[in-house]
Length: 357
Image (cartoon, rainbow, N blue to C red; front, side, top):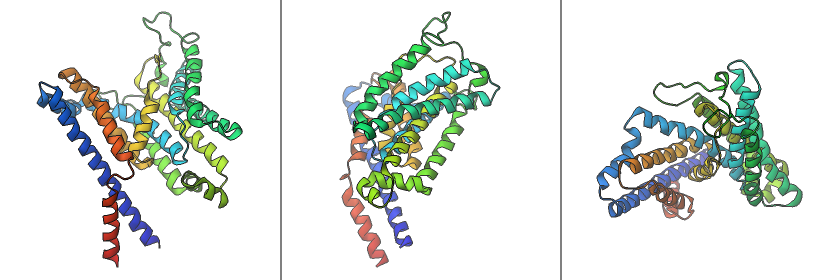
């Protein structure tokens, strides 16, 4: 039985890789057609879109920097979506956690190493709190976590922005931002000529822990089963209300760590006057990864790569960066469509059965 389950899993993995690759190929081909129609210099646009991120070490560093952030938010959303909880609080948690990490760095003078660790942990706790509120509202009063999380994003956004724009605001700065973050709280740059920072190691560690949590622990098993069929999970003895709560606490914590790492690794001050949108980008990443944490870094890298390529294309040619929205939309539509290439999956299963028959 275990051998058969392993073979089925292999088929599923091969099929998802094939389907994902096909979706990307179709999206790229359609994008090329559109560029041919709207651009007077299509060859230059193609080159900058697909090779622009590789044209210099600094631009490729931009891809890695963005992929770090998108991996955090993608993991956060994937964990919550795996439990069938459509909590959009990753955006508010990401923002609020970044603000809390900055305020912690400014308010608590601590030695190096300990300083960023404390700030990141407090940021993670902030993210967990932000995402847990919709979960508690749903359990207590049956409120939709989708609606309440979207509304609460703005509550936490304006609440934290009040402190960053008043108590911690630097009056001598030429724009609205906090005081300079202490050097002891900053995450060090690890590759010269880029802004790639030590958050790369933190996100790798987060991916490994999330994969272990989902695939190797009883809590992760309960989370997956609750997401697939909450009625059956409850009947089999799983405490589904607790599972739904800790899935959103875990997802919020990951989003909070991501926001803290972004601020301490990429900025000298906290200066976000609007929500950065990375939490909503995490939804795209989670969909592309099919809510599987092991595929989240791949999806995050892909999205980061085409976005940096689109920026390069828009700055060097007559094609605007909005082209990226077209590519994203096509990829998400094809990857999320359950019926897309389903006949190929059936053929793979039939072939496997015949070979083992």
